[in-house]
Image 1: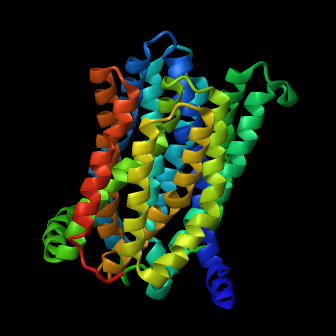
Image 2 (image 1 turned 90 degrees about the vertical axis):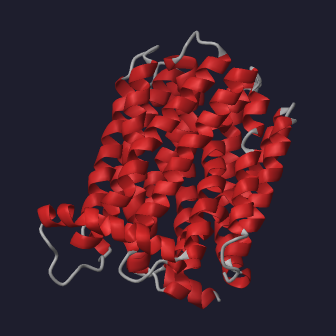
Length: 420
């Protein structure tokens, strides 16, 4: 087994592909999960009530996901027809990097501009994932999908966690880095994320070869033909009933996962936990998730990816109920460990399980729909938490509302095919 791990994971295309997760996970950790929720509540929404700032954050996350959710399948169809996955990956990566750096310049109290710039950065991040995910089938054979998919997530947790640890140090000791205060450190952290993302994206662009059509059409022909291909894709997906049930299940349960990632810090702040403890909990999640993601890859090979997903959904559902009863910092740390054990697993096994269902030659197009479901899920979850919190005035009820998504996802997943 160890020899097989080395022979698969150390191949240059596989390692280069996985390093992109190392690169863009800096955005997911430092910006999306870590500093943006804190800075949004305390700096860009300074003076607003807790429920109002939570609603605004949910709105920001929902808007940032909506645009790319609509665009994802169309972009995937264009990429498949023109063999342009790497070029479009580059385009969205540049957008994400530039917008992340631009967060440095958003002034105190200017929450609408923060929402706009964050939406652009998130669109670049999410759009890049459409083509990054599709390239999985260009670097890995079907028997290795679970292992390679988990490898990408594992490197992402390490890379994102390392930079996040550095950024946390910057905020705790800004004078060490020649910075005036913690706010200045957070703003500089946005720049470090942009640089990290840029540097470690280079290998995938240099060393991964996508499978191109023998005679790629022009961009104009690809755009015209994409609409017809999308219609065909809708009909094709409908013919694959297990795939349809999986996509519907994924839409619900990954919504809960994404919302936990994006709203956990805001939830902790709303309950009155200290910011330093919440950031420490995120670091715990990152480094627990690294070995856990690899372990889930091996688990998927042993018991089937679908069964592994069921296990992860059950853990998330239990964690959601547990979050309602949080009263002490140690409880938040314990919850961070539990989430870390399954976060990478549910993401990697979902991607590899879907990949095993994709018909040949439809990589980016079908992965476009896969990512569309994921991004539309990221619209519903934050808004569900935000609206529930605003209506009830209780952030605990807002977080508990996510239980509906995990239960619904499990019910629909049960209708998909039983083979892993």
